[in-house]
Image 1: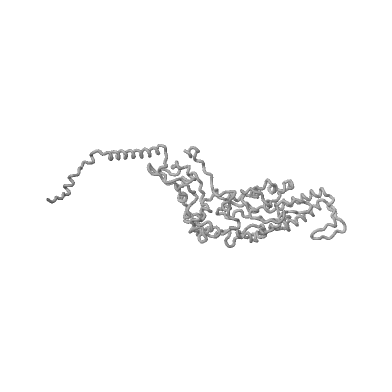
Image 2: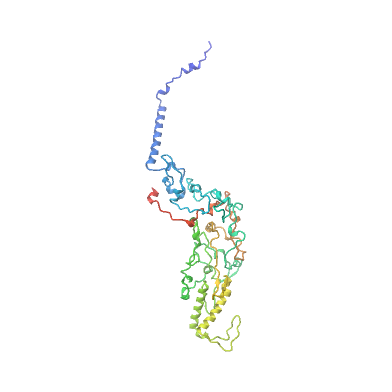
Amino acid sequence: MPRTKATTKALAQRIDLNYFKRPSPLRKWRFILSLVALGAAVMWLAGYGIVRNSKIYSAGRMSAAHAVLTERCSTCHVTANTFFTAKATDRACLSCHDGPIHHANQIFTPTCASCHVEHRGRMLLAATPDTSCTQCHSGLHTRDGSSRFVDQITAFSTEGHPEFAALRPGSADPGTIKFNHAVHLKQNLKGPNGPVQLECDDCHRSNAVNQSWRFAGTIVAASAQTTTSPPQLMLTSAAIQDDGRRDDQPNDQRLAPPSRLSTRAYMAPVSYVKNCAGCHGLAFDKRFVENVPHDTPQVVHAFVVKKFQDYIASHPSELRENPSLVTIPPKPVPVSPRVYTPQQWVNVRVAEAEQLLWGKTCKECHAISFHADQPLPVVAKSNITARWFPNASFDHDQHRLVSCESCHARARTSQETSDVLLPGIATCVQCHNSTAEGAESRCFECHTYHDWRNEKEVKNNFTLSQMIH
């Protein structure tokens, strides 16, 4: 007899609809564990709330500069309501930091957090993306419609960045010291003790290099000066600083932003005492082994007068002029010896010595002019540039593995002071580019946004215990 197929209704009647009411070990423990997990989560959150630790709500690790604030979210984030917190505002940033404005003429001021993005790990907050800069500088506009800066900069490249200002057409070294690099870098150059070969670091070093200079000279002692000399012009060992300047001269490195201020970043200015005196002496008369001080004409004149006054006081026989004395240029031999008074003798010898100094020795390097109403010449300021990039930062210390001539290629052939021997942007982009092997090339590497010349002191808001607990 054939089997009858059961209907769906008949099959449904076989199912026990109360099966879920019967106890089952699996369901029982699953329910218990669910309650335990929920309770543990609530207690975990409550525990963080009791100790006021908001770390569980963090979007990521803090930067190295703000790592100490990891447990203090409220320092930057102000509570908006019970469950939500506001984003960090400029006011919160400025409570600890002074961010001087970029330019008073700027139209747009970005928020702090738009450039300095937190919670991305132990990164450098100053490492901002180029878009933070190019959002304005790719098409620069100002409040009054004018700017002394290039108005289209898109990237650090020969196409996206202008040539450095010091190398643009019409630019020249403003220095007045007559110096020929090509001559000084020749082989077998005459030195104080025989032939020498000058190297770049014989003249160019940072302030941090603590080594003796090969061609340094002797500083004229203060006792050799006259009491009539202005004390601020006395060239003494106490007045010479590590960078070769006197106490009354400012240090251009103070213009550097705090993040780049370094004794190794910039080259110390070249000075006569450290770099030139060993070869280029300032002799003024064969009677003396001393050189005149490398100082103003007033100090030099006072020094020469005092030396001759002291000399004739101890050598009175020279007041009678010797007719056999050979002079350059030759002078007619007087019929009878001339007898000078001490003051006359000093005046004649000082005039001869200064004719040599002003007309040959000093003029060899300095631009000297004479004025009818002034008894002494006027020496032009040297105007040696201490910092070529006033709107950017450069650190020589980071580049010391590269030979000087790799960047300053024209130094060996330069013959004029007006030559600007800086490397151009084409040299820099060989290393600083956006390739995987390239060095950092984003804007922040050389430029800072904030005008640190207007930096103000910030009040101390926290105690040490608040910072570490």
